[in-house]
Image (cartoon, rainbow, N blue to C red; front, top):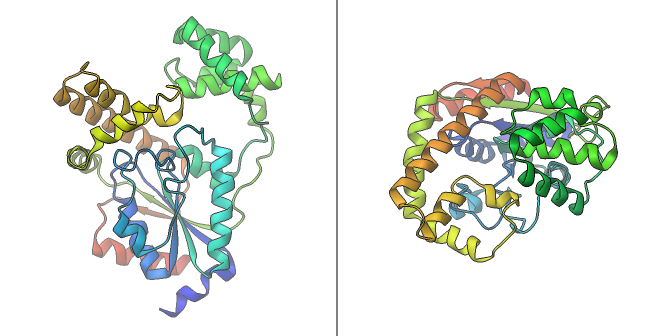
Amino acid sequence: MTEKQDYHKDRHYIIIAGPTASGKSAMALDIARRMGGVIINADSMQIYQDLSVLTARPSEVDMQAVPHRLYGVMDGAQNCSVGKWLALAHEEVTLAWQAGKMPILVGGTGMYLQAATDGLSPIPDIPEDVRKEVIAQHRKMGAEQFHTLLASHDNEIATRLFPTDTQRVLRAMEVVLHTGTPLSVWQKKPRLSRIEAQAISIRHLPPRQAIYERIEARFDKMIDAGALDEVARLSARKLDPDLPVMKALGVKPLAAVQAGQLDEAAAIELIKRDTRRYAKRQITWLRNNFISKIDTDSLFSESLSEKIFSKILEIA
């Protein structure tokens, strides 16, 4: 196909956003084959090497069929911030262009997707000791009281967050404690480091019930593929429970199964429920926050593939 030789000259890149189990990886693989592309991970859990099964990382066959980047490249003992991911993504996008290939970012992590298209607020890096201090304070006070404390420092942010939105509440507190400036103020400053290119953005939102059914079937396959053993190996490392990899969907219930604290069947139902809820939150975020040039509302298929590719050609 002659067109694929010219995309990199105009600095295009494709970004495929969709909830978990929506089939976005299959879509990315199809487009990469058609256009001579490089698939770049934009999922905050698939970046860790410890959980290939539980995070539904692309198979070895798929990863050998077309180039895949930023999958399993960080150890679980590390904390991959949005800024770290964006720096790595910049590098991989540039390398793809230099090789004359189309960069294809694919994932469902809203913060990653937004960073790619909009950039980041210029917030300084937060030292690890500050982060640990904030976590310890949160544990001591509890979610409700800590949220009240955050409101006294940054009421604008606190009103946007539920006390149970632990990760973002902690982030807001560590920023104001370390910098002396509320996160809400930082967020109003000009954003930096977006991928300076023409994004061909695809929002893939199949029917919710179809996604739920795929979640159910996929997790059963994960169990058959060794998800329990994978979590056992991770647990044996005795990593800090506040690290992102330890908060991946399914880790805590399956670790409880290994420890004899939870029945396996109950753990499986719990994980499926939590994954459905996560997919629902992703769908809501994508509908409200992700600006797309191409929208799809059905499961990926050969006919949908043709429609998507035709639209990509029109845009590019």
